[in-house]
Image (cartoon, rainbow, N blue to C red; front, side, top):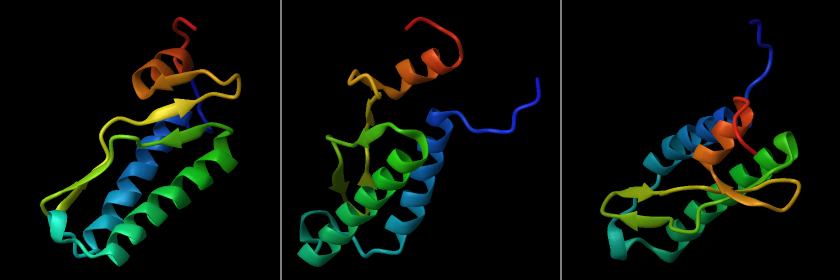
Length: 101
């Protein structure tokens, strides 16, 4: 089967990888992370969510995101579909691969 497109869940994973690369450039240090750096982290997440919304017509959020030690932990993404259902990335993967709605 020839594919010339990305699934939405693949685009979300790609965005998470890009965000983690950007996070490594920011000096995070747990609770001692500066307010400006915390804002930069939130801005990176917001920009990525906006790009995904423009490309794929779904909203992505990371409600359990937190800064742990020297890393940013995104946890699980919540995805809002165009029909306003909120699902996990695993459910989205099943739907896109032809599984249950």
